[in-house]
Length: 368
Image (tube, rainbow, N blue to C red; front, side, top):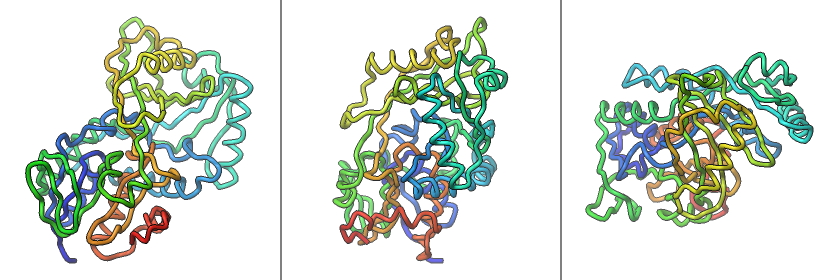
């Protein structure tokens, strides 16, 4: 195998996963990012849930997500041995319906998932409340036992430590231009053999092909903490749609609860709005009333790297530049399969079959 000097531009979950795996494979790796382990990955919910994210017409994204989900247990185990436990949970997901309209929508989702061979069980509100006693008066829902979740902050810290352990270097600088054989920052140039653009929403500023395919999509999250007088968080991830707004509650092992997710177009604005916080809390209380008694520990916003068709861009952009960006809501989920695809490309091999649909050539620009 030929070993390269690889410049990874962006230190979120995708960039750090690529840096770790590439450095472990013997490549010389330089990560170009002023604040690795932050950005959208730092404020993510941590759901690894391709099935409950699925929707008709997005079969390629579902296949890629499931391919990555299958890799997650081994990925987490290897990371735990190398640097630290990322807090992987296999408790599964419940998707709840508050009214008849929500229940009808879940029937459509359940029918679609069964049609493509995915495991899902429709259950009554009474059954859901027996499984998660803190739920409010929900009408019914779905049990999705195969979904996983991860503590995103433990994951990011472990990935950075693992990359460093295998010799990766970090510049602490912001990339302002990507050119064949080098990355320019405000203070220096990083010469390299291969550039991998993993800069999330900022990727659009670094390559003309990605400028047509990637845009920022703002999301706000809250981190809550159970108090001695409140009910504990649910044991599983809980998802719902409340008056047309998606909401999720993701428990952490330490008693924290991550609550999201607003989603709207706001350019590169990362401020948290009062409206967003109010909507999240109101929606969460409808589903899990005890949330109103929790301590509000943190409010934050991040910018997802949305793509034009919900699929990421993973592949060759030409001139020694690779793309691994545009993962939309699924950056944490797709980190293992994306890292595998990049390593295959670095070795001159074919990426995993499920990643072929994510080739940036689909934009019709001749970028490969």
